[in-house]
Length: 154
Image (cartoon, rainbow, N blue to C red; front, side, top):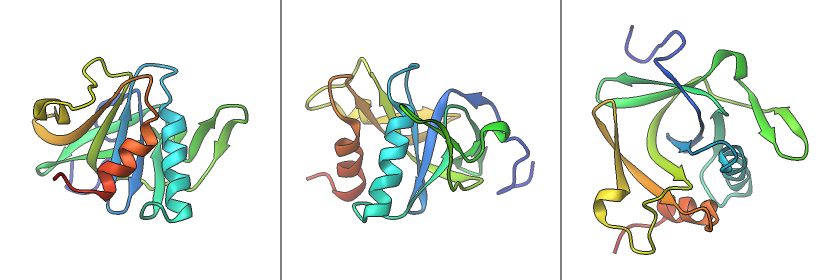
């Protein structure tokens, strides 16, 4: 496996990913938690100027691999460029072939808290520590993700 280029990409996981600026937001959670919805919301936030440009990496199933000391995400080949929009079905959209994961969002997270302890704000994938946002099912995830991407901790 050459650095920067992957075949199918490492193991496949049930998740969505959107490249926002130079890094990807990896969205995990159980079926029906809103992964596709958050992915589309991030893309729309990029188009409206709320965030830097945001482009789909993959929806529903993505591949993860270690590249150097980072985690790279790629779309599942059969799903590349496809996103589920509830109420419209499967739609085609622009996508990128790979991106480095810079943030993980866990939807319906059991450890989500109003003032989360520092250890819950990070996760480790294949030995690489990545910032994480645990989101309770009663919260809208988009404002939390926008805040994480546009503010700094005080």
